[in-house]
Image 1: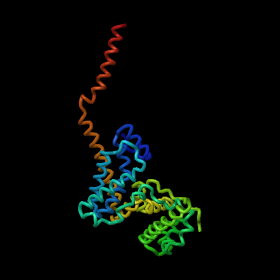
Image 2: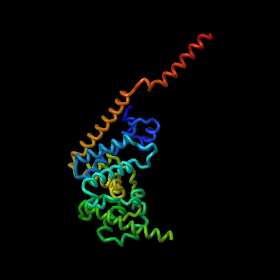
Image 3: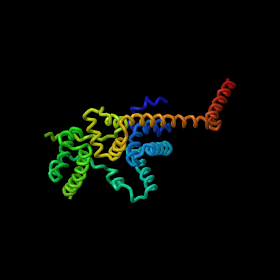
Image 4: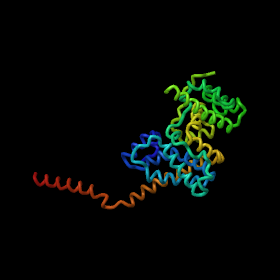
Length: 187
Length: 111
């Protein structure tokens, strides 16, 4: 079968084709879309290239042998969770659970239903002044003025990491405030 | 100040977009899409952090290696499947062909 013929099909179509034909090439095309992402995630956990390569091969093997019989809503998310769990298991076996970075443990609710600030733009303006100045400035530039990271670095003088950290912390704080506001409305 | 920026779509981002982002080859809109995904999607954030630990020149090489290994593995699977082919696998087809042949001969005799 010609791989290229199907390489532009959506994740959903490729899953459908696999489920009706059981031809693993369709799963292969899907996996090839996200292999580097999986490798990057493993690299982030292990900080070691050969361990990350080994982990990626393990996950590919698992996915090829145990691809679900029903459609997956989010292929990338599904593969990511398998990889994350594999990495955590490896680290747990090696070092013991206590030494793991707390950040590695993701709130299950967030994982299934991530909070995207882009969907709450109307509430942003009211909540923004409550943030620390550096976070407010970065959030305004990114979400309200449509600037990218490089432009924000140029305007503010912050490094890439500082911009990312201000956006992430700002987003986390806004999530708390906006969610509380929405709950008040619902009550 | 602009207040009517459209919500950013963080639809599935593939390896090719990650490579283009790391190489600075994305349009402004796509770049913002990836950067919004860094904030909304832990897999993208972790993957980009992990890939940033490697020299930029390695990334495409790793992608090529991963793709090549996957192709070889699928090819091996195909060959293994063919190697395990036995007459038992062909039995249902042979039975149907046999019945069809008998039917044909029967009709010819009747004529």
